[in-house]
Image 1 (tube, one colour):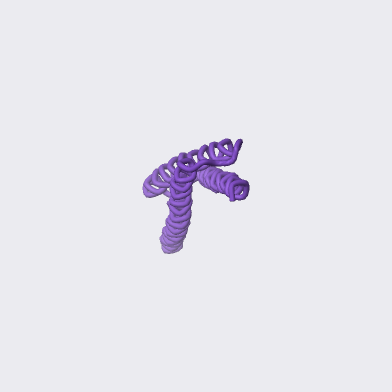
Image 2 (cartoon, rainbow, N blue to C red):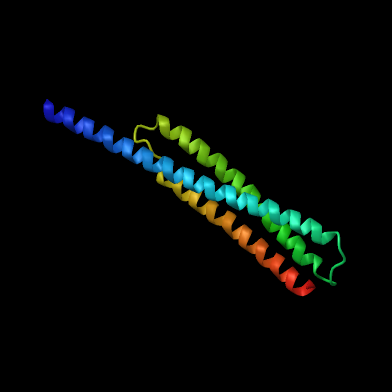
Length: 133
């Protein structure tokens, strides 16, 4: 009987540790996503400034692709933040205290896509800057 109680107590402690690691991972991912969103919106503001000035012929397509990439990245950031929040609240009810592997994989893929959108947008923005300056 005492062994069963010790095993149950050890399982509870392990689940708490797993949950705390999951919470920390979620916080860090959320912070990174906030930075990506800030860079996306700042870049869009810079582009709107560029659009008010005359540009070299054919470079508006660079800005258009850049804006679309930043907007897509922002959309993905918002979806990922929503999912992270849901997974965190769902994990409180989960007996294991963590998100499923599918949820973690989905969050990872969406986070990567938001970074990719930021990178593509910045690449086209840099290309625009090089052509015009």
